Image (cartoon, rainbow, N blue to C red; front, side, top):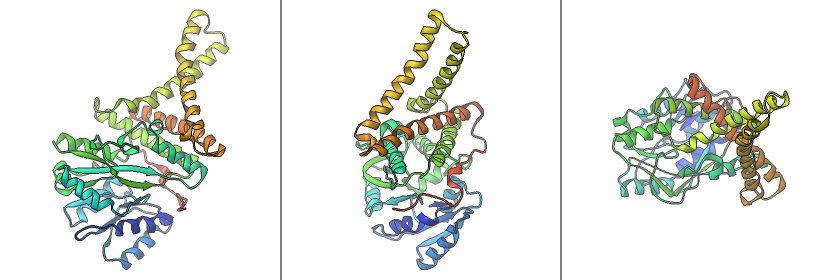
Length: 342
């Protein structure tokens, strides 16, 4: 479990891990980044109270570096990746181990079930759980078991991780997708089992959500640079929206100054504005429907959250494709304020 600034969240996440029912020994290794909110002291207390919890330092704070450090410190042949912002169901590990053996897979993952406490957080959770929000990846609500492109978190065989070289430490976001690409290239199976579910608590503020999605989009753009032709078409929808919005702004300015008109202006307006109108109609339709929540406040936040996610991710993606991710970090994980427990 990589950990950074999760004081209000860590203890509960750890309890769901230690409460797993497994046949055999287990350990939980926390890779501690340089937290500023007292998380490190809390982790030390947790480790002193339970011998199954071990600590390793992750001064770089990068997730893939922390994961590799924790895996290297581990003792057992199966690796269960967990997150300080998530909660495992009681039989998650037992069921995952059974699936791993049943289908002869190298990595097994399940559904990310996002939840929220406030109207804003609930809107983000609904977007996570909706194909409109995050593009329909299997672990965002899929119901059909089978081979998958990637896995959320994942229950993995150590020997396969060692074979492919572990997590790529030069990648700060999207490290799961890249690892699973190498696992599949090596001839192993990545498997999705919808019976596995993990509760995930998303970012709690608009600013943090936008920061998270810009960083994630930028690293996805970097991965497109590194692995051209290996990315699903759904990744290109948000950047296409950003480009179209930019063209709409330019066209509006040109029309206002009389630089564009006539038949050319009409055709250009239809080509540029109609996709935006269609997109807004979809967003409003989702918000007004069951996927938008129950009350007017939920529906308003849904209307605001979906474009925020798409535009922030798309902007980051374009920057990543054009100039690379470079040293981009997810600044939404920094500071002392994080998602509160309900």
